[in-house]
Length: 238
Image 1 (cartoon, rainbow, N blue to C red):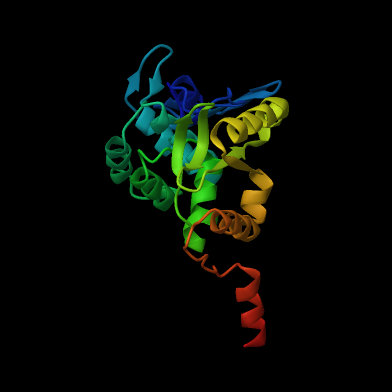
Image 2 (cartoon, helix red, strand yellow):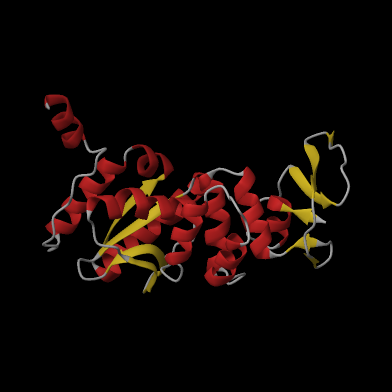
């Protein structure tokens, strides 16, 4: 029976077919490799479903977390929740049956944000590393407007934020056209950030976003996080 990322792919929680195929079996077996494909056997029992047999969505996601990075775990979980493949309560119920699960804190936190429109690891990073630590307002997610659906929208200040994943860089011309149309049709400006900016320079992104919001009427104040340059300078002085 298929499990982990192979099963998650069949459930459409993982977008790309994995090169490593995990198979659950009752007896111990040695894995093997054929070209770029490898098969690993997991000894244990799991309830199966579908054809070819695979673990349930919830079991697949929790098992996937044991062998994947935090970003891969978040990406699969966010995709499954956004597409209605499962529910937060079902994920948490499955998680509760395990003694220890890697990334369990993140899984619980993301389940708590279910329904807020987080559909990718980059959107999760943007909220957890840019918005929340710096006290910035959370925008409307997956917002629909005259020009279509966007990642994030501050309607009151007419500011949109688009997040571009690594694999989506081939659509620059379409992105530019939509940004221009949004500006003309809705008088809404667009800030656009990629994976490197959000993950490696979150404080600078937060500062720029705060400036843009402030210029459009936001009366709040950006907070410093422990990683902000000002905080690090203060630590050095102290």
